[in-house]
Length: 250
Image (tube, rainbow, N blue to C red):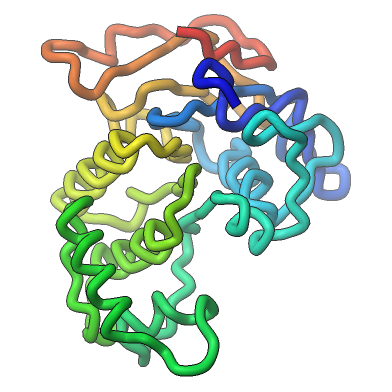
């Protein structure tokens, strides 16, 4: 795959649940090293799109390409094996187990190498700003700390594409600030990020944005944000028109 090609491309994706069209004719490109925000109100189809990328659902029509090849994941395990990880809105942690045991859960068989895993957690904490006590129980952690565990569970797999489904919805303001710093570091490491969030969240963070107006319709084809741009006000951009295809060119 050349550096000019998107890491992930979606073309004319449609997903229905019975007669309800959750996504309709959606197209967009996701590139390595960028944070691509999917903006929209509740019910606009953001989570459905994230779950399609992660293999939870399959599109009814349209095509996905990942690393310049056709991408049709058979399920989340298949997406994980291909380098795509996701943090869902609702955490999947075992409350009475420790952080390190939750990270190891489902990854290793036989004798668990807790010490080695704790060392990896320390390295990730230093690299991405995710302080965690590997031996703390999940039930004793705050919501923000639990989310860090979910993020670490993804990062320890060294994914190329990282999907976050409404990550700020359950966080306090100071926790949101810490999360956004983690997102910047993840993108700076060369990974692609897809972040679903409601309108007006995370201003100044995203490199590219697709705004869902409902059922997967997209507003504005060319909006690009640089988090390091001094004096840049993302609010100066205006969303105009209504289209169904996102042209993600700069």
